[in-house]
Image (cartoon, rainbow, N blue to C red; front, side, top):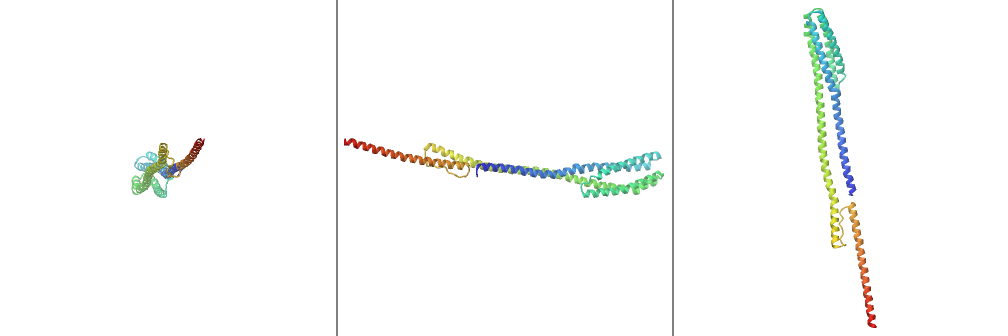
Length: 287
């Protein structure tokens, strides 16, 4: 594998790791975002509205009771006006509360609460009518026998709604915490795996580059000392360094051939000089 391919592979692995972590983080954040939206847009406002409904309902109950036990018509009239205000607050709070269901079970719970409230409302008016007629004992008996038991049913329905919402809120919080922990755990584990892989691959790439360079350096040092041009560099890989080593061996082949040719020429010239010298000697002797 070429060095450039190794570098591209390292870059590709890094990019793949980043894309994978980003993708997993995106999907986990989507799931977390849904739970956060459920809490912030549904459960928390709904629980706050539920508190307003409970407060208005409790005030209305007390207003009914005080209307019965107060002695003068003026005081009863004042309490009746207070009751109307509390019932108006109850209606407004309930409309806001009923507009925030987050699933089918919550809708069913809210519908059950609405049904119990619808039964309780006429009973309060019946108590007021009896109380305004001056029949205190009959009004108290009506509260005790009908209005209070029905009010308890309303409280039970409220409790069911509130407990379900709080349970759902706890579940959403646990899901958010689980998602965050999973995201952190995945990031740590995946990051550690990528660090190990990149370290191993980096060491492998470093060795595949540095070892042949070290071998070439040692070869050139030996060549500069003994001038043995018959030596050749051992080629173990097919990359840019291997190509350079092949070129170096080719240069040594050419250099060795040139030296051999020069040696042959030198011998030929030496033989010619010897022949010429011999001929000259013979001519001198003949003279």
